[in-house]
Image (tube, rainbow, N blue to C red; front, side, top):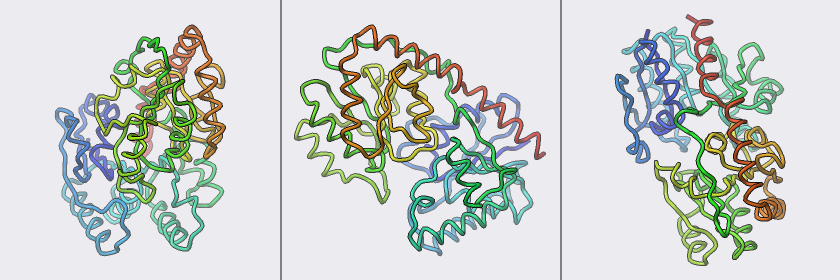
Amino acid sequence: MKILFSDNTLWGLLNFRSNIISHFRSKGYQVVLVAPNDVNSQAFDIPYGTRYISVEMNRTGMNPISDYKYYRQLKDIYKKEHPNYVFHYTIKPNIYGSIACKTLDIPSSCMIAGLGHIFTSESMKMRLIQRFYKFALRYPQKVLTLNKYNHDLLIARHIVTSEKLILLPGGEGVDLNKYSVLPMPNNTQPIFLMIGRVLYEKGYSEYIKAAMVLHGRAQFVLMGPIDEHPMAVPRQVINEDVRRGYIQYIPFSPDVTSQIAQADCIVLPSYGEGLSRVLMEACALGRPIICSDIAGCRETVDEGVNGYLCKPADEQSLIAACCKFIECTFEDRKAMSKASRKKAELVFDDRLVCNYYDRILSMNL
């Protein structure tokens, strides 16, 4: 049995799907990874017994010639490898990989982690891409989603039929053995930590505003890569906010756990998520959470139990949530830590996700 995974970055496969890759390897399957190489992936080792094939693609561009070359690469690889099943992730692999599989009669699935600006924008350009996506999504056997809002929206917009959709209620899950509970720090001033690609739509401006207002009462740390994305925050803007003393900035690092260990609370005031991996890991590590009350984030928080929800794109709501946490006693924070871990055990155990993948293969092979 040969299973192929296709993504728009090797880092995405190694960081988010290593549990599934290891699961299939443990069953004796051949596993092949297909993705562009990237700087961030160099921090990870390709799992033993897993092959990697590099491809070239423009992640964010819309040049039809470039995209066609990417499609031809995928088709040639799929034809040569002839896998029993292909799992696609992110927009371009979902579209071009699904079409390539259809032409070669290879069963496949694709995952729509977050709907992003392509599905939420009403511009002519985005509506055209939506139609192309809808066309391509006719071909995979199954389409995976990570939260009920996205699941229902895809049906309401007639992009995917309900029979084809699979909702993963715990997202892509986390390895609870790898992410064990960290002791809560007892910092004089609580340390808030925001982790993710440095994009405005992740709530960067709101986070900076909270750091400005609460300067002297808490520390605010930002960790993550500067991405090639239309909503990316320019490096000079980050540098200026660091110079002013609002935040500490840590570029991408594979050692996320050591940073979370020093933090009292993980913050993600995002505008849109599939189901945030960072927040699931924070739960597993026993950290309280403050995040936007949106699909893909709210699933990780029980209000007042393991954290607080804030309104998306609302500075004052985020500030109020941070103030609530600052006013908590150390015993309150330890209770939140225990509640986060409990939630991870009940909802985000990656063994539950492996069961879904096994069912998908059993239905289509």
